[in-house]
Every structure is written in structure tokens, then in C-alpha cells.
Image 1 (tube, rainbow, N blue to C red):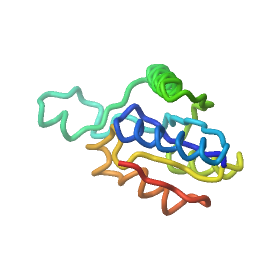
Image 2 (tube, helix red, strand yellow):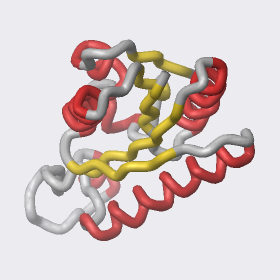
Image 3 (cartoon, rainbow, N blue to C red):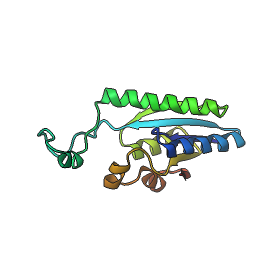
Image 4 (cartoon, rainbow, N blue to C red):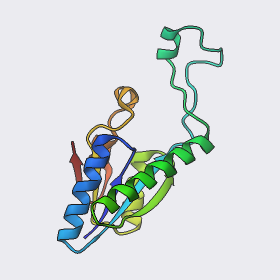
Length: 149
């Protein structure tokens, strides 16, 4: 069984990775950790400088693509380290685009048997605005999705 795990550095994604490792080892399979960067997401709410805390709370500002790539590589390295602590190896892949679309397509294109994802990731506030990646993956993926707390 070859499984894909979406990681974002959150406790829930670390739990998903640990669970995926256990399942893959029991099935003599492999684990690949993926992190997705969405370069199309940008500052929303206007181009004026943020003037107050309430103004900042209404705006979504993301880092540069280069900073997001570095953060993504750091998250993937943490996944490799966590797998090593469990006595396992994981492959890694940095994806670009909408996380739900890219993870589902990558799993399908690469022939993965299942996807593991954390229940709540780092994007808690954003999740309220755009919905849960885990929930959307369950609806979109063509392979079984296991959501881990």
C-alpha cells in the first residue's frame, strides 16, 4: 500500500504522518509526504497599507513564493525527521497550486492507494473562510482519505 500524506507542520498533520507510517509498514508499503504552495493566493482586501489590528484581521496576507517554498521545504524536512524517529523513510514532494486539487490529482496521477491528512491544519482562521482541506479532499479524491486528529 502506497500512501500520500498532506503535511503542513501542524500537530494534526504530524499525527496523520505517524498513522500513515504505521499503516504502510503493516502493509509493506511506502509513504510520501507532500506540502502544497498556492502561489495564486495573494493579499486580499485592498492595496492600502494596514492601518489597525481590526483592518489586519480582515485581510489575508501571504508570504512571497520564495518564502513559502522555503517554509514548505522546512515542513517536508520535519516530516523526514519524524519518519526517521519512527524508524521509517518517506519520500517528499512540493506541489504548487490549490491544495485540494493538487493533492487529489497527484494521488491519482502517481497511483497512490490512500491519502492521510490532519483534521485541522495550521490555517485555522483561513479554514473558516475557505473550508477544510481535509473535508474537500474527502469529497474530491478518487482514493480513500483518512482524516486524523
